[in-house]
Structures are given as structure tokens and as C-alpha cells.
Image (tube, rainbow, N blue to C red; front, top):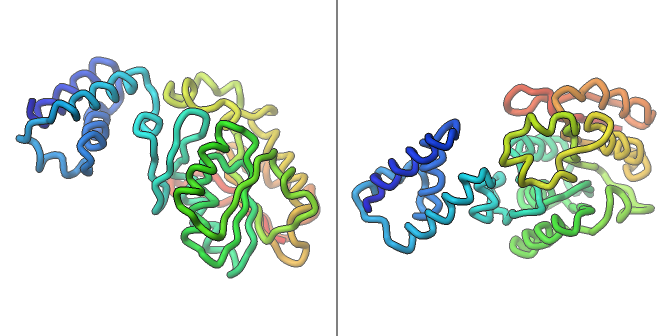
Length: 279
């Protein structure tokens, strides 16, 4: 079967199963199987699809029709300039979080020591360490399943200025202070579970998505504990938050009495997504 013919067949199947953008689904799947970019598929339209690639595509298709995330199916995801291994048990890094990394890099002074809470795949810490070799980055991760992926990516990239610890929030950093704390903690309310697409709610780890108190419990705890782990002379805090949590996050940060400057920054889509605080 020629590549273009099979791509049309995939598009028809995705359409029949109610996927919103079947053309993108088929192109994304086929480009991974063929190890080419989606925009390059027309260049291979008349080429026959080898039997081995066809079998691989059929396996991918079966999993995708069950709404498994493509990132789990393929076993990797792009994040800024990195390719990170991901799979069951770890949150798939989002484009918004790439923008958080950009904000952090722009504001941090040279040679800063950075602490990340809830590292997951290690995306934030590894991106910071790879793009800013002057930084020293450490991250914590509570989940044993997620920590496997954290360490897998750390070892694969072999960056000298980053390391990870197994533990909850600041627990691995008792008695230590940093120039900055960065986090993308769970911020979705349990009441919003059914509003999430099936590839998220049925596959990604609930402990990385949901938090009590309308999604704000872990963020509030981290904000309360942060002053004990930030340098009193000058330091920074960057948290990704839910789009409706801005006022509550500002109030919680203000109540610590530690920070001199507070603000909410938009993500690349204009959504109020990031809490920024400076001592």
C-alpha cells in the first residue's frame, strides 16, 4: 500500500471514531512510523509502505483509538530543544510549561541555584540546565513511577549541573536555601475531572493533575514553605497555576510576608498562568 493511500485510510478511521482533527492524527502517527516530519509526508506519497512500518502503524493506531496519548505511544515528547522519554506514570510536559522555562531564564541572574518541586519527567530542570549552563539545578519528585522517568532523562542527557531527589516538595532540601524555586504542581480541581479530554483523564497520573481545595492545596503548601528555602537577600519564585487561581495565588504569596514584588504573567496564549514573586 502506498503511503498516501494509507494516510487517507488512517484519516477515515480517525474521522469515524470522532477525533476532532483526523488529518493531524493520521499525519502525526504516520510521520513517527516513517521517521520523517509531517510536512515531508507528501514527498513520500507514492512510496509503498514497508510491511514492518505498516505493522507498527497498526499497533500505534489501536492504542490511539483508545485515546492513549501519542507521547506515551511513541515513548517520547519534544520539550523546547530536548527530546524527553515519557510513558505511563508521568505527566506529559505542556507547551505552556515551555514558556515558564523562558520566563525563568530571562529573570535569573548568572550562577543561580534553582530548586524545582514536582519534577515529573524532569522537563523544567533539564531545560534550564541545558540552556543555562551557569545554573545549578536540583529537583524533587514524590512519585516512584515518575521518578523513573526523571532519572531516565537525566542519565540520557548527562548534564553536569542538574540532579534529582526522591521526596515530597521541599523534604529533600531541609536546611537549604536557593536563589529560585520553580514548580508546576498539580492545580486541577477534582470537580473538573470529567471536563478533561480522555487522553488526559484516563492515562496521565491523577496525582500529577489533581489537588484538593479546588486544585490549590499543594500550591498553597509550597508557597507557605518557600520562604524557608529561599535566600533572604534576593530570590525568586515561579509557579505555574490554573487560569482562575491568580488572585488566590497572589494572596497566599503575600501572606508569607517574604516577597517584595508579586505578579501574574500570561502564557503564550494570553492566559494568566504564572505566579512570579521576588524577594
